[in-house]
Length: 68
Image (cartoon, rainbow, N blue to C red; front, top):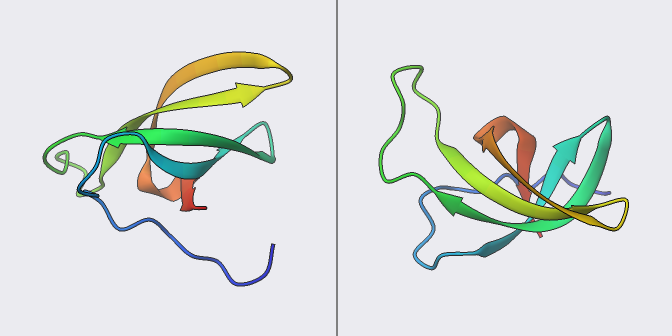
């Protein structure tokens, strides 16, 4: 994958393209960030992505999302 580029939330537009880390693989998707950091200090967002041909919607922290 080359150099790691982490997303820097919150991005200005909803549905920002991203890569989602799930089941030890990276999947193409989009993310909509929550408006503020959570108590753990991390940004969280709802990611929509295709996994094995099925659309999946899950909430992830900034650690499982990368810019694409």
